[in-house]
Length: 122
Image (cartoon, rainbow, N blue to C red; front, side, top):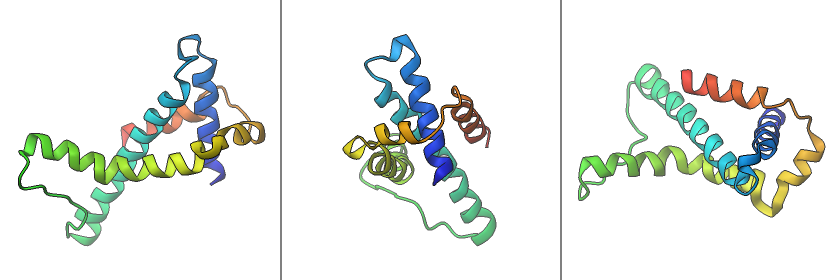
């Protein structure tokens, strides 16, 4: 959990330090971290389902919606939803990020950028 909080603090303080992000740094942080975590989660589930188990169990098929619309909705529900909820409850609920910012060191965005780069490259 410590690494998770370090990355979040690094992300939020980096975004907050940019003049263009003064009004929306919290939203941008939530978007960047949720997308990166969703891609990581997708990678883990692909490895688990295709390589280890050879069985697809984590899928959502909505037959009444066309595939072009259903696939993005499924991705949002299955892969972006869990990180979004986790991030909200562990970081933003009751403004917990304020306590975390006081507690953890700022690495000038290096941890956040490394996390995003590794997550996207996978």
